[in-house]
Image (tube, rainbow, N blue to C red):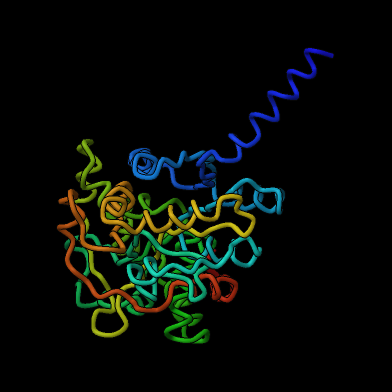
Amino acid sequence: MKKLAISLLALMAAGPVASQEKVLNLYSSRHYQTDEALYENFTKQTGIKINRIEAGEDALLERLKNEGTRSPADVFVTVDAGRLWRAEQMGLLAPVKSKVLDERIPASLRHPDGLWFAFSVRARPIFYAKGMVDTKDIQNYEDLASPKLKGKVCMRSSSNMYNLSLMGSMIANDGADKSEQWAKGVVANFARDPKGGDTDQLKAVAAGECAVTVSNTYYYVRLLKSTKPDEKAVAERVGVIFPNQSNRGTHVNISGAGMLRSAPHPEAAVQFLEYLSSPEAQAYFANGNNEFPVVGTVKDNKELAALPAFKKDSLNVSMLGRNQAAAQQAYDKAGWK
């Protein structure tokens, strides 16, 4: 009995201390080395310890769904607006009201109701094999469906999230019918059936298997920065065009984060989101994956900074998720595998 009493007293004494511990529980699908410094810097500034679980987006969303209101997660971090939209549709995110975030994050790069905010931007321009195509023929995404490119286009699968978001932007800008016709035109121009990731498309262009593709910019910059001669050679053989500069601008997507509805540490969650928009955090967050910062300009990444300045599509990226189902339907009707 004496031992039990001592144990109970110890638990009672430990309770208030534990409840006062400054922590933030983070579920993240990002897994870049520079993120370690990003999180360490937050703890150094605030004294808030970060407990982190990393996994794929689908696995994390399923986990959050199963945990329900008992979830210990405070913040969900992921890549692509389409995945943030899925979290939104599952009712997992809570609106955040923050003057800091509203002032720092452009309106087109945050949810209209504050359910999530972008902290880095990736563009998805057109890449081409130098000497194999006239660049005047690939100034817009719409040009990828031109008969001039028959047998010259390589693409990822239609179910790829990046391509779903691209189609989502096409639907928002051109309408569903025109976008479906565009997809049919691109399919007619395929040099081969869709396969592989973005890097595979760039390698196919460099090898002459096709002449044109689309890819997120960070895959290209990663090749530029590679210490492997064969990978650097790929980057040197391909050129980049940021399309639609005379009209809506180049399609962009994001890495972003939102506070969970059941967050046990909401104040720490908002503090963390605001921290991600700070200049020092932007450098960590963006350069860790060769992405463009949402706030300020590129620093300490000469290869990324060397890319030409370009006009971005001002479409609110929340539309990329909202149009996701329509995007897949358009691809399916076009026979895009």
